[in-house]
Figure 1 (cartoon, chains in turn yellow, red):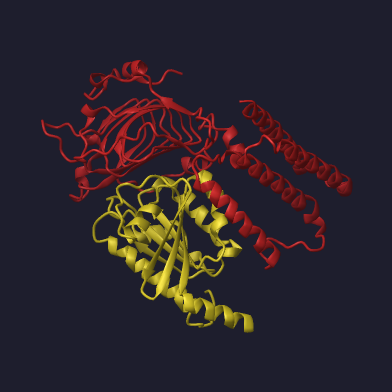
Figure 2 (cartoon, one colour):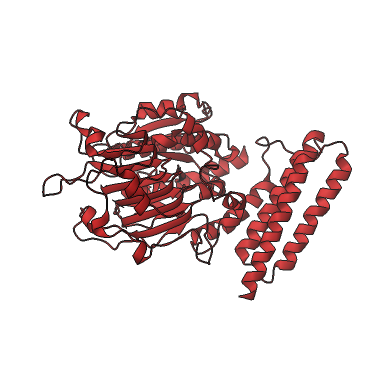
Length: 192
Length: 349
């Protein structure tokens, strides 16, 4: 227990969280990150490697890792798993053609030992596009209710325009609260 | 360069050898485990020796990926031979925590991050096997097979399973969607020998297009003319097509012989594609919605299947004489003579 106490105290001092943004290519991971950071979203190019953004949110410093989602890059995702407190899975809600792909990649991630315990936030992104799937459609398409190993939540959002932009912050607030409860309040909750 | 030739030669041989070994490991009968194992181990150590010998001229990236390939082989061997005997010290996947493993992976993190961070550094060898089979999307397309047979879930707007037709905005019946026509994506799938014209050309002034994104899949011998969609275009499993679009991002996967006419503010991405040709979007198709046009990046193609120092063999720029002239686009409704248009305009096989 001694070691745990030290670790917990240490983390309490820093109040850092490591959040990993993943999802298929074209999901809008980088655009969301830019929007959260209040940067211009019109200049985003497909991500060749990864981006890191650090910003303060309430009492916490969030270190967000945004890794490219091209198929070629997906084998590298695992290099970013270590010490991840929360996984943010970004979905292009208009990408009906690849929902199966999206579901398979997500569920593969959830079996990763190094992501065990990480909170899972699913962003049903691009809600500004008419004809997009709704968050409840995506919940079913990705079979989220079957997830018992992680705390999860789905949030409809858009990084571009409309009322859905606030979904970004609602999602981030949830993730921060969920991680904080686990890391900093020392409450010993199960992961179910 | 001599080094280049040497390393290419080495990588080819290394890949063939390791694939052969991998196949032998897979097909090992398991009747004589010990002998098999020794044979495979010596095979691996020979490969490792070759790799070390090649170090002087091999780029660091290729060294690393080759090393990873060897590790994968060892792992495969472990799983194959020892998996059945459950030797001591083996951990079943996903079971035990160990400091040793953590140390190793964090080292890996460092190197791979560096690698991925720089676009100039090649990524290819890791996905070597996939790269080899880039040629034909019709046989390959990992995700394609499942979804192709499956019904696409209630797409709002789009064309599916059509052939030899001229399709326009009117055919999309945008207006039926409770007036919410200001903003939509379009899904186009499994068309063959069609011309799709979604340009806004009614009257003299150009109406702001309602289309915000394009998803396309399984197109054969089609000409797709899109307006300025502002959002992104995602295209997969296409063959022998012409695609003209003005968009924010353009990604195309597992496709071959596509001529893409783009107006784009970010770098186009191709992945597992071959014989791709790029040209600037022809202005008369549709004016840009952005007033101060940012520079058109159509020529800065990023090939995720060829992130090496050498130029990608999978794409090039369209030559002037093969570019469709501004007045030659089949923008007016053609009936009956679609074939003729396609024959004249489509990329020649």
